[in-house]
Length: 202
Image (cartoon, rainbow, N blue to C red; front, top):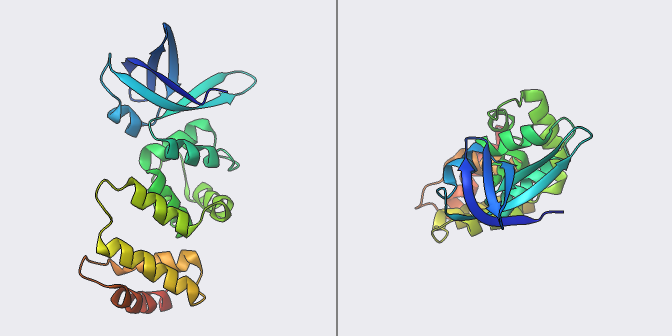
């Protein structure tokens, strides 16, 4: 219904923003991460929005990045993750971190979010894994990098793809490559060799 709002920041708290659009103040719930990045009062801002409609309330949730909104929409498809819990997850993790945590079965990282226990984190991974892809996750991570992708990032991506081509699951491949702790001077072949050793111990 409301795709985005462009207006002047009237007020900001840790959890909410009031954006004045043509004389009308819209209150939107935001993640603590977005609240800290919000332009100063009186400056213009754009919020990509999600309208939650329930029998007892209509609430607007806002995001500075469209990618965060996309991940938030996905989180709302997970049973047991409501609007506030979804916002809590995106306060603790960026969209990129969440994607990689889901794809690598990283329950521990997802459980860092407020109100998300191990059981809910496992359910989240189970329900979202088929809706995400490694290729898309790498592409979005590179697109979000302010600096050009380093050689190590390219080598890691190629190593993951090589492991998947060898028949390993995407989550095992990603977990193994992340476990290597690749440095800038490592090429794809070196990372792949170390990842193969790592994957055999998973």
